[in-house]
Every structure is written in C-alpha cells, then in structure tokens.
Length: 399
View 1 (tube, rainbow, N blue to C red):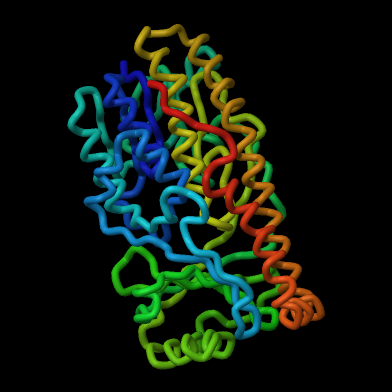
View 2: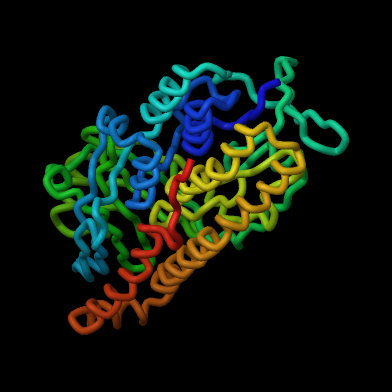
C-alpha cells in the first residue's frame, strides 16, 4: 500500500514529498497540471522561507536556479518618496525572488532519486476513496485508484480534497482583485531592485524586478467598484501619469512591452479544521493568504516542516491509523497561531492601504507632513514586517 498520497505538486506538496521520500517513506505525488508554468506563481522567499529550505537541506539547490534579491522597499505618495527601508531589515538574508517552475522541477527530480517515490502529472484527482468513514486513498480522472494511510491536500485555495471532505473555508470579505502585468525592465531596477508601492490620488500599484531576467512585475490594485476597461485602457499612460518622472519616462518609452494583464482574484480564508480521519490540508488548501508581503509560500514551507516532524516518526514505526489521525490535530494546533496572526497583520496593512486610497484628506495630510510622520509610520510598518518576514513562532525540523 502507498503510505502517503499528496495531492498538488506546488511548493507545499513537492517539498513535503521530498522530505518524506528522503526519509524512506513511500509517497505518491499527484499534480493535475501537465507542467508547472501557471499564469501566476508567487516567487518571494522571505527570510523565514529561506530558513525553512535551508533546514530541509535545499540551499544548494537554490543556487542552481536563477534568482534575484530585493534591495529595498519604498513607498511613494503622490510623486514623492514617503519612506524607504533597505533589505535585509535585521535578518541574516534579504527577501529573494525565485521562479517556481524550475524550483518545483528540481524538487521533484531530487525526490525521484528515492525508492518508493512516484510522481503522476497531468491527471487530476477526481474523488477520494473511503473505508469505514475514513479517507483511504484517491481516485484519478483516468480511473486509477491509489490506496493510502494518509492523504494530504496541498492542492491550493480551491482544494478539491477540502471540498470532498466538506471542511469549511471561512473567507475574509473580498475588497480587491489584482491585475498582474509584466513589462521590460528599467536599468534602474537592475542596479537597485526596489519593491516600490506607488499611491497617487485613489490609484495604487506596486512594481519590482522579478526573478525572470529583464522583466518588471507590476501589481495594479483593483477595488470592488473599479470601472476601468482593462482591455482598452492605455496602461502605459495610466502608469506614467501616477509615477515619478524617471519611471513615467520608462513606461512611455517601453509601452509596447507591457503584456496583457492577468486578473488575480484574491481569496483569503482559514479552515477552522484542517483534518478529518485519514486526510490533512496544508498550505493554501487550509489557509489561503493575502498577497500582502508574499506570505503564502513562506508559511506553506513552515507547514511542511511541522507536518514532517509529526508524520515521519509515525510512519517509520508503522503507527495505527488512530495515532496518525491524532497527529493531524497536533499539526494544526502547532501551526494555527502563526497563520492566524499573519492573516491579522496582512489584513491590518490592507485596511491601511484602502483607507489611504479612499480618503483624499488623509493622503493630503500625509504628503504635507511626510518629514514629520514618515519616520513614525516607517517604524510601525517595520514592526509588522519583522513578524511576517522572520516568522512569529520558532519552527525547527527535528526529523
């Protein structure tokens, strides 16, 4: 019998599969997509995520993948700098941008060197198998069935595993979507890769140089009452009209490089219960995160470490199903405080951004009083970032 089936080969599923396989546990990893090139994948590894990968013994693997560090974070109100904070903000390493497709390929290639690991790609899970009211495996769309002592749903915010076992996802009220653009890079970002957030009038966007060579990434915040015709809009001129002069010039000069935007529907939520007999949810399947400060992949990697700590000893000793199911409760209990606190911090930052967008008087006062208020607000922002970047609790791999 396959001991563990993991549904979803994103960062959560791939890293957990590798950890388990390296420790001699039989794992089948199933991915519905035929390749890893989705339209959007988060690529920001905070110090907490980099630390998690280092604990897993994967730092050398990262060196073989093209990556790019961030140099600073900057907020521009109107056309003036409000404040800037340089990396690594007291950590021992800066935020690093890493493309997910080559990372996932490398993780799975390494897992495939272990006996007992099987990877199935391009065939989605259709349903779950049951035995005496306990999940006992999965059924694929091509009719194949895989038995398992444990099924792990790492299949994202729209998790089919979560839906099949009827676990509730409590969603935060939705107030924004994101339009995601790519365009030609400016030399200024090559020498000083700053994540810039620009607020001008009631419009806001963030821009930075991603891990992909020669490409800027731009996230345009869309409010619930947005009426911009996204297909017909002159985006180069819109961005330029809101930007400092040097960046406005770049938008106008490279207007032809602006790719059609991808609309990202922001889903933020939390499962009050991550488990049922024979099944566990991890990562976005259990707690889809806001895009604020790129927490999703970093928290998911920490989920993996805690799950491995609990599961490896049990599977080594061929524990009874009752013991495995008891450990699932413990995994959630250990991860829950950090997830809840991170979502609270993200929500606080998102609400502050919305308040600035909607309140012209407040924006005007902040711009006028920037020399006085900038340092105070910067300190408040930094205090929030320390927790989100470095982790709220200590997570250590012990197996």
